Length: 305
Image (cartoon, rainbow, N blue to C red; front, side):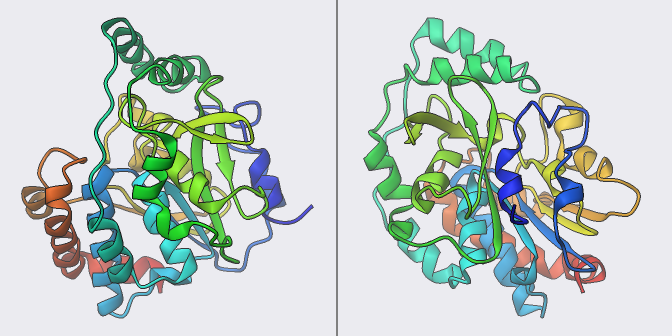
């Protein structure tokens, strides 16, 4: 079994909300190994993440040298382009030039079930409540959604770099990870990871419907276990459950792991605003990330280089 294919088998039966994954001991990693974890955060999250990565590169810190890239929602978009070594400014120009999608709507009963599930994201049952309620939402079509978030990835092969895209099965609530060994289209995997329940449509892959990996955790930083250096960029660093927060998840990676979590600081938040789906703030979010890169470069370099 290859070093990556074992990752695709990680589901709730081997990964609990509190414990560690059994697959880490099977991974073949260089020494020291570095993981880049990119969390969710909507359109503004894509902008902030990309701006931060561009800004750090201008400071001589290339996060594209990560051995593993783990992307959730917005982080799956940016992480895929990092793994593909696509110039991020070019990717943003294509993304921001598209017409915004209409946002989905839930009926009152489904909205109530959605909220109940939101307070139990640590178990697959709670996530399934969210997913099944979201399947009833009136949203854009799958193809319309993919054309907005991942059209530039259509027919694009998976990168050779280890890229892990997080999703949640909308019916079972099970965490599902897609990698280059999963043999699924890259554009659909990225779109599925971005499919905010009730807002955007679930994405069908091999006959099953998947929603945003952020339903399980905003960054899923605990999936970086086994790496010696872990950098988490989290547009949304909070969570309903305290132990789902990136800062707490990285502390559980073990004593041998060095980790750093970066979230938008006060100056960045002032530019980004409070609505992660506000496309009008996308350019300002890129600027916020590039500006913040100057303030954090020394800390990141200490971990990464």
